[in-house]
Every structure is written in structure tokens, then in C-alpha cells.
Image 1 (cartoon, helix red, strand yellow):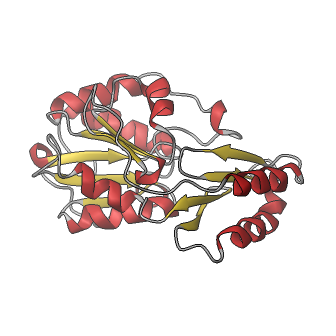
Image 2 (cartoon, rainbow, N blue to C red):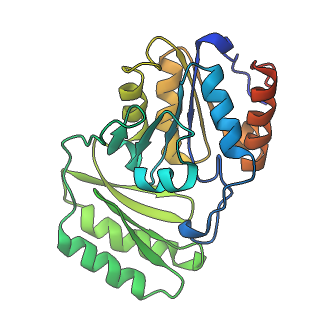
Image 3 (spheres, helix red, strand yellow):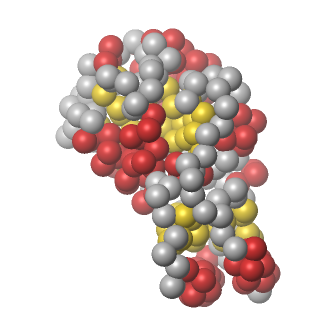
Length: 243
């Protein structure tokens, strides 16, 4: 269990990663399943926290809408490359570059060389998943590294059985900073929960705001543990579950 001291419930803002945190990891992203009761628990927590519940994810905002509906108050998608800071607000995108079309073509060709690997396109970047072809990780890393090697605008990030190319300046730490400027998050203590390396920027930034950053494997074990904690926390109306 974490040694972090949970912030007072009345002052908290809950910032949650999606895959591996709220949802169990699936073989392919489109195969994830929203567990029964999760949306209701998120809505209950949103009510208890004055609305201060956000999803911070590498997925597009539209995907979060399809999976979770109106349960979160705000969504930061694409690792901070897209924001919707309140229900019904427009999606905002920082002034970041999109990858050249030639890169997408080369990435698609690289993925096609490895049965089981596949390309995921996003508005400002892309990634190659290799969960179904685990031995191809080094070759995919080499192929994408060659694309970004001399680029001042893009970088590569590892995920869970994924290598992703994204614009520099789009990370979950930036997402936390932006969310914390807006009500109902402003003035609260962020609690960021995530499961992999792409979440570490968000965790660090949450701590800089005086809140907490918790890694799923260290604190909860897995996504099912996170969901159980959310359910218990919503029922109790307090952070007492993590002493």
C-alpha cells in the first residue's frame, strides 16, 4: 500500500487513467469492457466531489464518451492533446503538430509486417500495439524510433505492449496542470491514479499540487482493485479505504 497520505475528501479531485486503471486491459483496444456498476460509482463520486472527477487518458475523447457517457465531468484525451473541461464544453486542442502522412504510411507498413500487431491512429499521433505479437516489440521500437530520430516536434513513448509517437508538449502532467486551472478542480488536491509509464507525468504533477499519485500495481493490484476501491469510497463518502 502507498505511504502517501490521502488528501481530505472535501478537498480532493479524482483524476483517473482508463485502460489498466478503470478497465481491464484487452487484447485490442476496441475489446475493452466497462464493468457493471462502474459508471454509477463514477457518477456517485462526481456528486460527492462537487463534480471534480476527470478521465486522463491516451484515448480520444470520443472513445471515452462512448464507454463512460457523462460519468466524468472533464476528459483529457490523447495524453493532453485534447481537452473538454466541462460537460457540453467544446473539445479544445493545444497548438501541437500532427505527424506527416508519410510517417503514418510507414507505420502502417511496419505493423503489417508483423501478424498480430496493428496501428492505432489518433488526431495528433499514432501507435503500434503488439500485445498479440509480443516478440515484435524491439522491431517496432526500431521502426518508429527511425521516424522521430531527428524530429524536434515528436517523441516516442512506451505503453503497455505499445509504442506510441506523439507530439512533444502533450503529456499527462500538462493535462493535470490544465484541468487544475478550471472549476471544479481549481483549489482542490488532485489524486491521480494510473498504471503505466505514460501516467507518471500526471502522478508527479498531482503531487506538486499537494495531492497524491498512485500506481495501480503498487496500491490496488489491478483495475478490479481500483474499481472495488471506488465503489467502497463512493459508498462511504470518504477516503478511509486507503489508510
